[in-house]
Image (cartoon, rainbow, N blue to C red; front, side, top):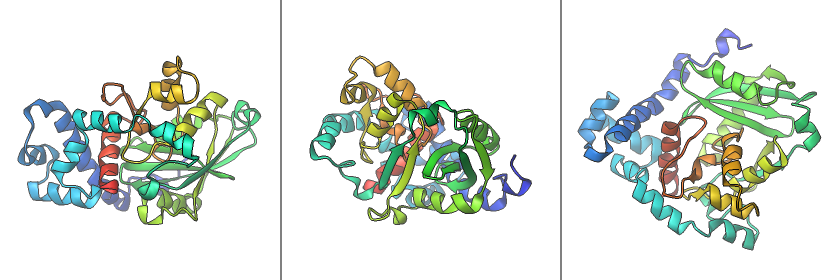
Length: 292
């Protein structure tokens, strides 16, 4: 159970989440009014900040101007990236790399738990967790003895629901709140200055063999690029399994690090996201700033 001093609604955490809260409101307005192409004054009013504050926020948060951030979220931009990314997974396999263009990306090494460990529902496994600020709201970081096993994201007031959701994935595991253990992992994930190839972040994938194959493929999508469910299905030699791939993507327990947010529909439309489409849009815009 969460102790009162660990519930992530403290002043510090609220301040850290404030930027994302403004971004969330801005994206919500844009999503509902994109045909009118609202200007920065209209978006700022909807986000409850001044135009100047909105401009500085996006520069600080994503490294982009508001105009560039919005362009990164448009359908035409997504379609262009899809065209450019059509062979990105093939190229990855051909050269044997963990992912092309990962200079600005997380450096990740990963392993999968055995089928027996997965079938046991985490029995005998101790998972340590903690809540931390992130660019996308409150992050729930879950660590197994061998590495990062879970990463969930939640809005203020939804932290307990996020924890319950993650616990349901491995119901027989023992869960221990351990903020000190998870804090440095959270920093490694969200602070790009700590993304170092000589010190890769170790991730432990807990799922079925099919799910792990899909998640492994997600790790090969470079930041700033997209792919589709059908392309992933083809990549893992299951060309008729796009629907099953979609289900596996939706079950990804390590969001952001295993970048399921980089999978979109064939048309370039953003599809469903377990942690919310607004958050998916925010991630893609933030990442556009990282690789700009």
